[in-house]
Length: 325
Image 1: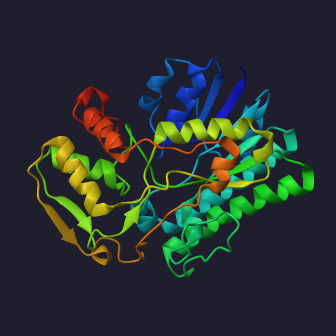
Image 2: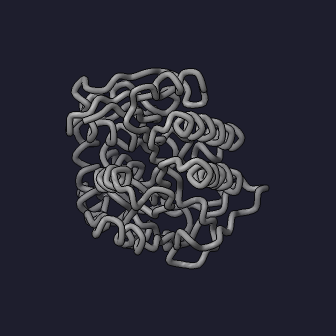
Image 3: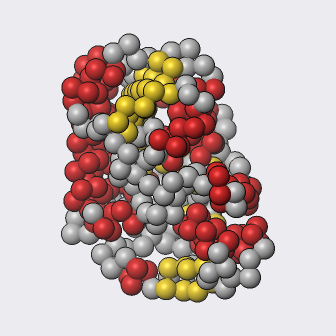
């Protein structure tokens, strides 16, 4: 047992991670500015997590909270295509500032860190499956997606530089389309949006033709991988794809949601450019999980149909629906 700092711990994935740490008996400090997170998400921690409301870009605060910690999980970031489309400059600045502060302060104190990055760093035209050692092909910087990808890639580069120069123990986890109970549809997350529409009897809105594919991964599976990677000395100084490699088209996801809800909702198509005029959609995004499998011996494997069922069950129970922050 130990004491851990989780930045962004009142968000979707962060709250799942904080709860997992609490369940195994660790002391948890959550640092979150509540811009997209909420206090209510920490209910699953059963009172075992201390919430500090503040910014992970506050160097004095982060340094103070790291005192006595056995590790830090850095999840604080601006995420979601909706947020990126609306406030690209703020998203990029937030990602850069929080990453610099958390990484530098952790390295200075010798506190091991797990840094969460994003599959966005691979860009829109990278060769599949996406390998950690491949050269990144970032989108044009004139597009919000390009700026966001750069902000996450810069955080990765700093983490790895600190590892080389100071022996800083850090793992970089590139996450792929994490889904599950507690995720909000507010910032463009497709699964909770589909479920919400189906339960209301509204048409399920698919952007584009729906043939674009993603590899969705259950939040609980991702958390299990993050905890194991953090504890594994061999993972230090490495970039590791974390996710599933099972592709599903957006149209197929809509059909899974209709089946799970028993909804008669129609599927309607809307041009992606109409919804997000400044963004370019990605046709396929499939991770190579060879490195993850080599380190852990296994990869996330919960079928997407099971995850859809979990999300439907939660959104059907008003008392369990997370605040839309």
